Image: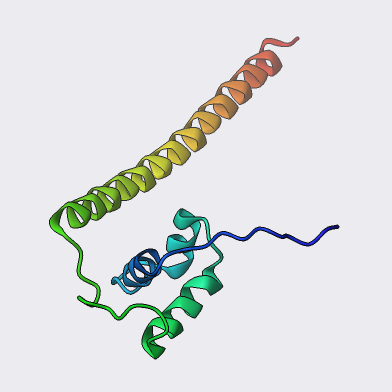
Length: 116
């Protein structure tokens, strides 16, 4: 297997934004890394570089503009709705399977009692 010769490069703004997103409450670094298509270790390295002053200093620690805040709020709402729908779907599958089994058992019982 050959070694990778071309690597993605990211600017200081991108790195600082990624670190700021990772520092938001209830946001996991692994989720941010997955969305940004980077390895989670990159976020931790960038955070260290940011703290050490290697990459641009933070202007506003963890602040987002109103559009980003509303988008995050919308995303959280959609994720919550999605989780609720998944749970309802699982319950309906279980109920459907239970009804199917009951119908099969009823048919078997009718066949047994009819003398066939």
